[in-house]
Amino acid sequence: MRIGALMGRGMWVSALFGSLAVGCGGAPGVDGGYSESAEAANVSESLPTEAVQAGAEGDTGQLTQGLGGCPSTTVGWSQWQPSWNGNANTMGTYYCYGTVPAGNEGFTFPATLASSERTGSAQYTCSNGSWVFQGGSCNGKVVSTMTASGSSVTCSSTDPVKTKWIGWYVSDFKRCPDTGGLDWWVNQYNNTTICSASNNYDGYATRDACFRAYLQEGGKSNGEFYEAQSSGHIAANSEANACGSMAGYPWTNVLANGATCKYKP
Image 1: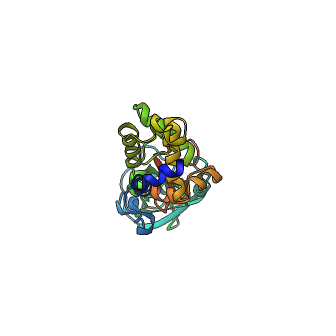
Image 2: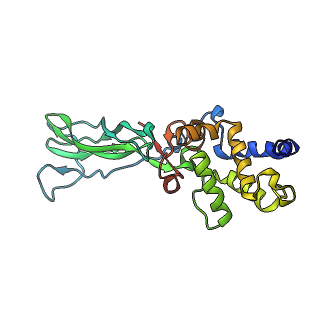
Image 3: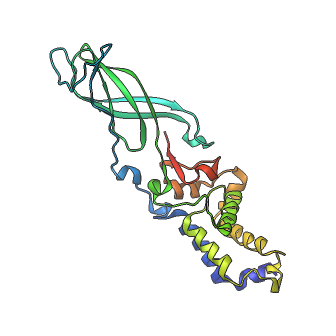
C-alpha cells in the first residue's frame, strides 16, 4: 500500500526530491562550484592605526618611517583552535595575514587584518629596523549560511507546524531546514489531501508519521538521510550546500547555531 501510494504520486515525490536538492543549496549546487562568497564580498576588517610607544602613556599619533624605523610591510601570524560546535573539520591552526604601516623605532602598531574569512588582531613592535610580533589572535570568522553560500536556513519559528518540521529535519538530517524546503513541506502539510485518514494515512497509521516518512524518503534518495544517521551529523553534501566548500556547519547545538557557518583552517 505504501509502495502503491508512492508510485501513484510520482510527480509529488519528484517535487519532494527537487525541493530537498534545490532548497538545501540555495544558490548554485555543489557541481556548480561555490566562489567563496564571503571573500568575493571583499569585506575588510580594519584595526586602529594609532601608534603607541612601548611603555609610554599619552604619546600617540600616526608616525612615518624615520631614522632607524621600520617600513610598511605584510605580516602573518597563526593560532591553533579547537573544533567549533563539534565539527572536527574546523579544528586546526588558523593563519592570518595583514599589514603594518611604516613606523619609528620602539613603537608598537596593530596589524590590519587582510582576509574577510578570518577574525583576530596582532601587534608588532619596530625593533632594529624589523617588525617583531608581540601577540595576537587568529580564528575563522563565523558567518550566516547566506553569507557563506547564499543559502538561508531556519532554526526556529513561532508557527507550531514549522516548529514540528524543524524538529524532524534536525532529528533526521542533523541540520536545520533550508527556508525554501521548509516552506514547501509546510505548504504540503497544510494544503494537500495526501496522508489522509481515508486510506489510513497511506498505511502509516497517523498523518505525522506519513509526512515524516515521505521527508525521510526524500533524504534517502540523495543519501542525506543515511549519512546523517550513520555519522551523527550533517551529510557532507548538505554541509557544502549550506556553507560552501571553505566553511563548516555546526555538528552540535544545531538549533542554536545551525544558521551559521565557520571558515575552516
